[in-house]
Length: 424
Image (cartoon, rainbow, N blue to C red):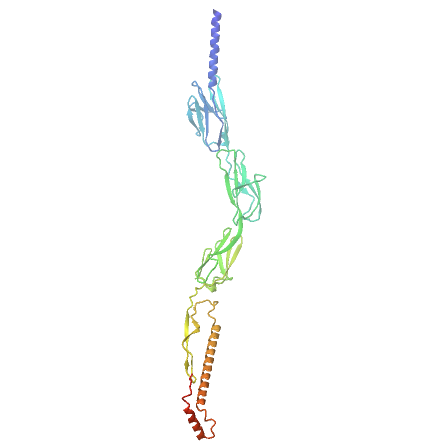
């Protein structure tokens, strides 16, 4: 009977120890490591899934109690209570410094006391990098060895070099050997980034360094490729350089502009209000900066304005020739083969009118032929008239004396009716 009772007591004690062990396993504090940037705020949280009203406590790396449940133990204005309950104790540490880094402890006051560790890592932000190894100004083609120095970084800073936003691979992170050059007629600048890739939400500190200087480059651009007389013309002097040349100087044929009222300079532009032949010549634009000087020339040739030709009108002329001889003959009005032409006084000198030599030759031939015809016609008429008068006195030419000639003449008149006369 007694043995039986002792067995039951032992069994109950075993069960009690089992339940206490199970309860103790649920009462275990849980924490997490925290990483924060110097100057930021760190949140330390301790949680317990099962708690039978057991107290929680946070202590720093020096084993100083920060909070016991919701009661503040250390006078530090940077440390504040975030949440306090039987299942959680959370506190915040603001304006964190490198000295705050270390192992923090959360304690659960059971029997025995259970603890959990949380390591606070503080990252140091690198100071603004300092670039050295060059003297100002740096000319194009100069060899440089640049050095980047930075401090305050934790962990060590990751130093990178950039040129035109493209990373430059170097053998030694803090050294960069390079030669000054110029690309696309503009300056090249170097960007240096010093920072760390291990930090959270940290922007790199970037220092922009404009180091290249070069002499100006000049080009003259006309407003029209074919300048004509009477039209305006604008010549633009396009200049680049570092530092930028300002202003530019305009000259003509090695001297000053001859007509300032008509040739107006505005900034980099030369505006000629209206062109004429006297504007022909060589125009020069000169740009200067602290590094050097450069110039460009433009040869201006003013072209004539082409004229529009007026239509040519041909006016016919009437020619009358009158020849007076034994017989007066008047030629009928005829249209001459010549024509008088009206010439445009504004026509270009290079254009030719009608061929006057050809027309003069034709007129001379016509006049010569007309005169020859009239001469031959007059001679023919005169010859036929003489023959008629001689035939009329025929028969008296063989008479020995005048009386016989009269008789023969009268005899010939008897037969006059038998004769037929033809007049032409």
